[in-house]
Length: 69
Image (cartoon, rainbow, N blue to C red; front, top):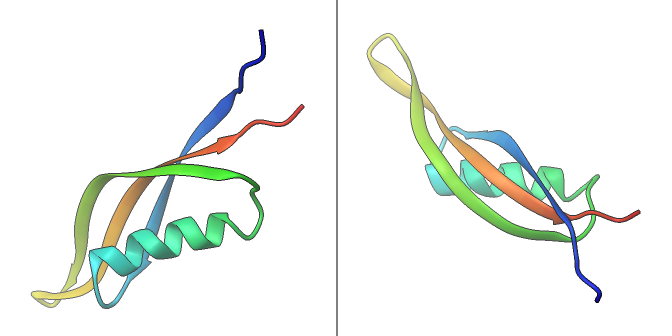
């Protein structure tokens, strides 16, 4: 029987523009050093605030990739 194994990590992406861009940044940056990315799940969305203004959007992303031996 043949199966696959996947590793799951959590990342936080940031953006000055949107949560979507923050999540995309996390996945695409991870893709520069990891192979076989499979599924990304947005776990938490939050914002950084300075002087009563939103200055950054943050997305915590749970990302899975295929584990190669």
